[in-house]
Amino acid sequence: MEFPMIYLLIPFGVVVLATTLFVMFNFFHIAHFGLQGTKSSIVLLVYCFSFVGLLIFITQILGSLSWETNVSLDWLFFSTYLL
Figure 1 (cartoon, rainbow, N blue to C red):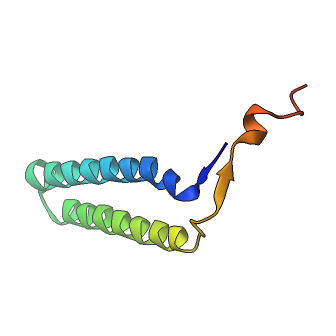
Figure 2 (cartoon, rainbow, N blue to C red):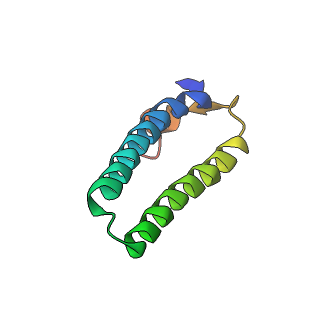
């Protein structure tokens, strides 16, 4: 059983979308209910910059991969190592 590696981006995209929604909810919650001074503003900035930095890092890693290659799952289902 073989499929193009680009199909692995679909569940990854769902996870990134859910994470982005979670980060937006946290940003709103911190900004609306927890923003009391300079320290909480710094925490909010560090939170946002770390998320954006992580997205940039992941984009660079994913951009370096060859997505036209096929992934084979034959070793998982028809392995002679299990016998």
